[in-house]
Amino acid sequence: MCYAAVSSIIISELLIFMNILAIESSCDETSAAVVKNGTEVLSNVIASQAMMHNATGGVVPEVAAREHVNNIIPVIDKALAEANITLAKIDAIAVTYGPGLGVALVIGTSVANTLALIMQKPLIPVKHIYGHVYAPWLDSKKSAQFPILSLSVSGGHNELFLIKDHMEFQVLGETADDAAGEAFDKVARMIGLGYPGGPVVEAAAKKGDPHAFNFPKASFSDGRLDFSFSGLKTAILYHLQKNTSRLTDKRFLADTAASFQRAVIEALSSRVFTALDTYPDIKEVHVTGGVSANSALREHIEQGLKNWNKINGKNISFRTPAKLSYCTDNAAMIGAAAYFEFQKNPTRYETFEFVAPRASFD
Image 1 (spheres, rainbow, N blue to C red):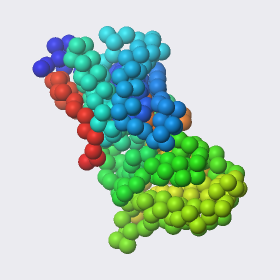
Image 2: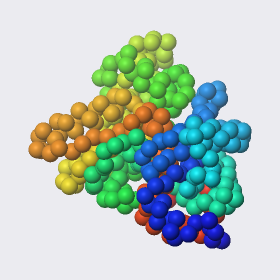
Image 3: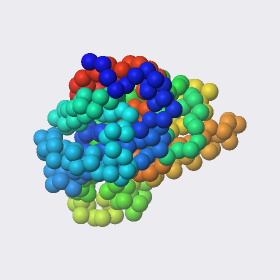
Image 4: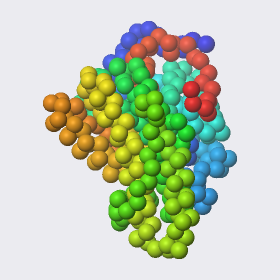
């Protein structure tokens, strides 16, 4: 089906000015945003289910799906209101189609398909991971310089990308088993800190000694820059089992949290600096994704990059999302990725194509 309302003349105009309504529902945040020209966030509304899932120590897919059903229309309405814009003034619809929880993704994609079809708007499907990659573009007035080394660290995935241009990614490393964010959640549960694990472990770590315990960091004999945190989780479990008499000692638990966090940060940052040594043309380093909200991780890599620049006579810049809300799952990052995806091939979106959710990674 062709979009009757979208002519080639309108599409060429959209390359200059474009308001995108973006929808994100891959896990336990229902989010809608209006993003102008890929960088200017006019609104970014997030309905989080974190408190609800705290009772179970993690996301229950069926519960998440029901909450998405309840939240998605009010969230979209609020995003449009905050942006002071109507659907008629929206130039395109963007939606996360995967990876994520299948029962959650189907809510967002169903609404996006319906809106695009009824309103005769281009529909731009976006990979959730690419959304995280584009989060550092949000609210940024400084153009990025390619090639970029991007570390994306979230609850379900870790990726290290060499970005040669918009939407041109070379995967340098990826998740071999468990992602860093998932490790934070599981370790937080083991220690009895609650959910989500990232912020509570970071808070506990600030009260502990990061060198109190030496936990393992996985490496690969073939030199791969992949990430593995399953062994670290097992090490924490054995550590706690060997110290059952100390599980009520707040200092012991804080030291455990701090030492665990150090192991994660060193594992992540080591891949970044190995990549910098391997690819000499890199102009910027980006750290993004839910775990990039961790201040210790950002500070460790930023300071390490300053030292690396000094030693190597380089001036590689460092960038993270401008707001912590852009680190975690949100629709604004989906709108940013959609804009640059659209610029690559605008005529691709002249014809409506149904967007189906895809839960698995590819």
